[in-house]
Image 1 (tube, rainbow, N blue to C red):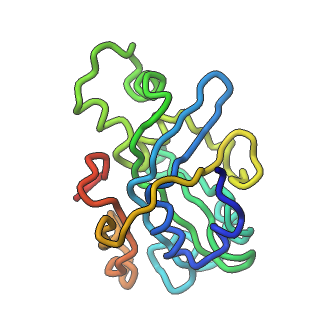
Image 2 (cartoon, one colour; image 1 turned 60 degrees about the vertical axis):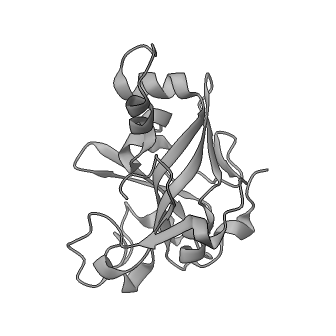
Length: 203
């Protein structure tokens, strides 16, 4: 079942934690991609100097001002797309970065998208490396920047479905990755991942 608006219009930290175990589905026409969300990071607005939007909205970050459930995509290093889900009520700024996915469906096409070669007897390492990072999973799914602003609650192309229920013992909370530039935010424990899942980007 597709997640409703009520799921996304909550506190960003709760949304980031509760997205673990949910299924991200993307129907690009010829292929349906499905994967379990196994790692997320929360970004919480003006008090979080690790967030792109902490100093206010720009043309790039304008979607953060919308109601929770919209997609925020941006580029890093001039080449990798980062996929985020807007949280909170309209006007309250928060977003969740999807850091890693465990592939479920469309794996052969994910492989071709990532490695630019046919799917033939892939190694376990190759399969894990498909989606065990925020830029990797976007490439594997074939997600483009055209999905910026899409609404996961109503869009016919992309949505999040309910998944397995995780216990607190199965969820690890830690500092976020690669935000050493953030004087305050680098110490926030706003990264969540499923314990012992092989597709988590970094243990």
